[in-house]
Length: 121
Length: 183
Ligand SMILES: Nc1ncnc2c1ncn2[C@@H]1O[C@H](COP(=O)(O)OP(=O)(O)OP(=O)(O)O)[C@@H](O)[C@H]1O
Ligand SMILES: [Mg+2]
Image (cartoon, rainbow over all chains, first blue to last red; front, top):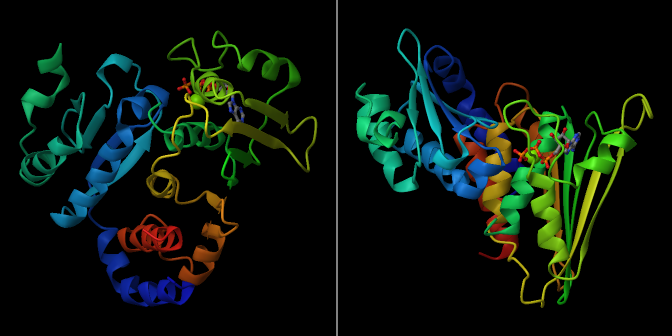
């Protein structure tokens, strides 16, 4: 069975890295996790972001959660905040869209307009 | 909701909004029944508010008038012949022991029973979103075995500098639960 001792090993391995990470992280990916978002499939979208950010080494991004964004019919909704730039709102997000958002937007700096709220309206 | 584990994720969001510091998610399962209990030490609800909360036309939220989380969970229980009960105490009523307990009881063999689904992903999502809240998870399986995760134990092993939502830590929690479930 996984033991708590393994966590102590993770602790030792990560100690040095934590200090470095705290300096960047200037992009915030926010997933709406209210009732309407969860019902529409926000949980797998959230987990896909956590995994893709890791897999593609997007160390400049942190994934967080929020309550109702107020547009239930467009859920799951994901907002991307970046210092000095306008907020980007992705709507009806599916896990399959996540690798591309991380690659082209989070790492590449180019929002994917066809997934955004402007395209849906 | 497609899975009860999604209702759990949603109901626990209420506890987080109520500024709980410890949230217990307790599942007790037999071959025929399932009880889901969610217990928090948050701000609680007054009896008057609680009386109206089961009814979808009451909520304290500002962006939308109708709260659906509790009514949906209640419906999921009642449609199997089970029930949902809530007890709650506010800080004013009980400064030492305030909080909310929501308990839902299901008959698993009823045709309208919603499967529990991916409860591991629900827990990982919760720890990811709220690394500073403590979660105790216990699932008593029909064969009597117990699946267990306690973030307070994790925190103790990790020390202060490693947040619980670090990728490695989330992976450890996921693998630990999967192993206990025998996945
Ligand atoms: N654990 C709790 N502690 C304190 N208050 C709670 C708790 N759970 C629910 N409430 C109160 O009951 C209200 C109704 O909850 P419910 O989940 O049904 O709807 P909601 O959270 O308002 O909206 P949503 O449809 O997004 O869930 C909440 O707005 C909150 O005021
Ligand atoms: Mg709710």
